[in-house]
Amino acid sequence: DAGVTQSPTHLIKTRGQHVTLRCSPISGHKSVSWYQQVLGQGPQFIFQYYEKEERGRGNFPDRFSARQFPNYSSELNVNALLLGDSALYLCASSSWGGNTEAFFGQGTRLTVV
Amino acid sequence: QQQVKQSPQSLIVQKGGISIINCAYENTAFDYFPWYQQFPGKGPALLIAIRPDVSEKKEGRFTISFNKSAKQFSLHIMDSQPGDSATYFCAAGSGAGSYQLTFGKGTKLSVIP
Image 1 (cartoon, each protein chain N blue to C red):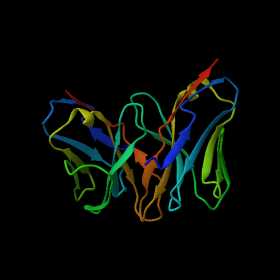
Image 2 (cartoon, rainbow over the protein chains, first blue to last red):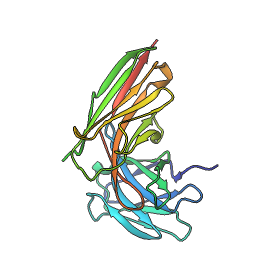
Image 3 (tube, chains in turn cyan, purple):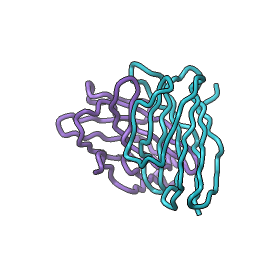
Image 4 (cartoon, rainbow over the protein chains, first blue to last red):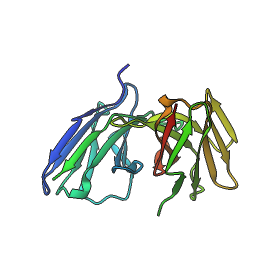
């Protein structure tokens, strides 16, 4: 069984640029959430999507946006990158209804220089 | 505002010993409390989780103890092994349909032979 897949695994961007990160959830899971994990800290919730609709948003600026596609995959977009956006970006997939467990991908390591 | 406080920040345990990590939360809306294990370069992996209607849950060498009135929960790792050396995160979840997780800052566990 394929787990949560994220691409790319590593990325280096320059301040001010834009980045798009991608996530494919576990087959059968319809909810995708995005988390930011800064080095040495716990993951911090950014967005939750279900059926292409945003169902939750964490305390992140409007430079962060996301969307979910009909096949339940998702993209996280970050505009006007800052040095402080350097982090591991994690995607988690789960089913919807019954509040089941969230399973994380390996993440995308973003470095902003 | 940190909603989930985790301690200690780091922990060194002898092989065969018991590792204990503690967490405290503030938001009474949380109704799901998972623990994740993370190895360097990997995404968090779900270890064990508990809901507030039980005070203890055991899976193999891992046990969660939950104190609803004190708003505290802890992870006990019995017979700790060098392979358990990793960073452990407690989390608390709330939400309808699928959980949005708030993580602690993590505990780096080192199990020495």
